[in-house]
Image (cartoon, rainbow, N blue to C red):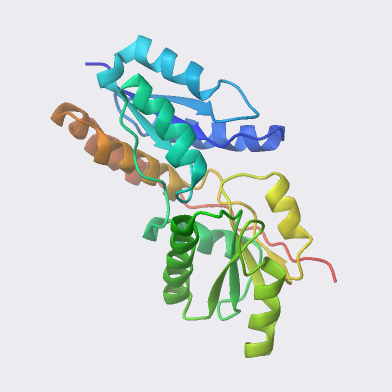
Length: 258
């Protein structure tokens, strides 16, 4: 039986954001065994969610499709846009990518790439949502990162919730007397990351993007939601292939100018 993992991202008018998502889903496809991986967007990019669902169902039938949201938390786009379209198509939806321990690995690597010292306090900066579940999920992810770094980490939001990123930076700087890093809790570049770069943090990491840990997480979300044992066997094989292909990430450095 054909199976399709339909990865659904938010979408952006920024071509760099679309390229980042496609790079990530290409990485997933290389580790997916016999599962077909396709990409769609809720808005601002093509193919649309509706088009992606139609094409995936044509390829595998509704019973052969699993939607995996490329979203780091719950919120309106997941509970309304994605869930509604998938329900109408008779297709199951996996839970969002975050919070998850594997995102700690990705966030830590991005902070290291930015040249952030190990004991520096961090603001985990999400896009923001008025949905309390999304806010709570970001705070849980911040707690995971803090436990890993053995340093203070505060969740903050670029929009729709508080504290704002600058409020959180000011708080941590006042409490610790240290410079503060901003970890971008974003999947792709675009408007929200541009806002983070203008924040008062001393360092700003790049978005999580096509980190291998995120690709692994996407495949696992698919496996957790897939309906057949045959698909689960393919998932195990794909995960083993991902582990064999693991090569780590780049180790560049970037600090904001004064």
